[in-house]
Length: 296
Image (tube, rainbow, N blue to C red):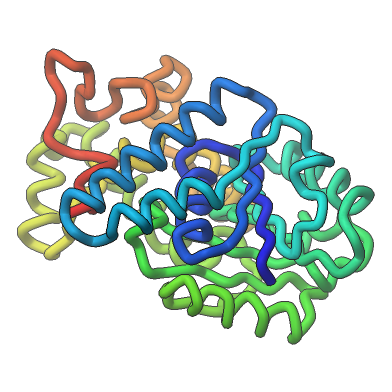
């Protein structure tokens, strides 16, 4: 397995492309927007420069990593000859089903099709694909080049051979893969999102302020980042989507999104990506947080 296609040049997609390319794989990074591709490649370059400045990589490794990445705006051209396709598009079920239906028609029967979904059922995604035994979840953590965990999610029909291949591949990326079963939110977000939602509810009901809630969790529970800060980092729209998937999947009110979260997303306050969430990330009031903090 040498040729990897990554669909989506956003935060997760460019991080996944960066990681595979850094370990010598040929990567086709695909997005419908040329602007998104340029932004994604710029992020990869900036992160490599940061790693270089901290002597985590050499100049030669930076250059070889960038040479391994090729950008495409056409899906068919981008996935041609791919041994593995990793979908990292928006956390939207309809969009993912559309993409996988296209992949089923374009890719060879031997191509492994993985989704970086953080909550949507792999079995549901696989329903759009012929030979559904080759569909699997490969849920990376953000920032991908730094975080060690990969949740490997088996759909109902995912084969043992495909699961073994993805587990071994993750280890070659110096990640720690953990195999989990196909339930809404899997493990990471099934536990994390209710905590974030409860922090938002605590703020909504006036229990404490943003910094106070985050300080309690950082100092009292040894979390490296408070839940509200983490929600900003993930994206409040993504948090909302995950909670909605779990609420609809389990029919349990404990997963119902906080009204404050819904209102903030509706108002366009999505966290780091929009410049404002629970914290202000504008140039004039930049909080000392976010995407680069793990790159130390």
